[in-house]
Image 1: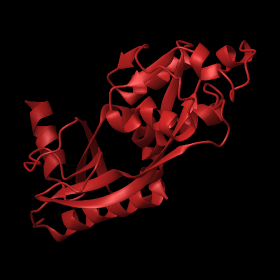
Image 2: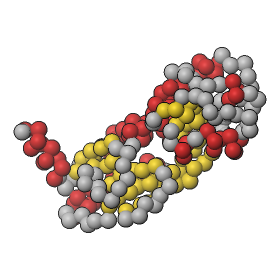
Image 3: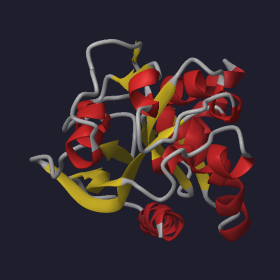
Length: 219
């Protein structure tokens, strides 16, 4: 009962904002940035709800971050940021490869596939080749986080979402064998809000603050 009362108190706070995000986005992009939100806006109480759903109900969240080809009807949709796709591989795997990436590196490697078609290997093959690259084999994983984790563990080469792989590349747990080559996906992430009014002025301000902060982080 005490937990229920505390949860209700948080949900009713004029400074409480709940954002819905996909699991991979939450793990790889949003959670590492939450300390900066706390420093910049200490009164905002952000709750993160992990889900994959885009609909018109928004019963549990104030806003959502969605990947895909928006805008979606019946919702307030605003582009947040583009995405960059590029291959990544474990540095250990790369150091043991004698092949130059411009030749047959991808053909020799085990490809890791994201089930999301917007991050498919077909986009890379269409832009950079090789045309003989077979996309039929290789593990197909249910989330971008699993794809990146599999690459970090040395299971193969992944076509990474750059926004989600950025930290791993900087930390050296993933390596970009093709250097600066990348495929740009415009308007890949969206801020999505319901078409409804927010009664409390302070609460409306808290939501606006979170939206502005997300845009700053995306920039």
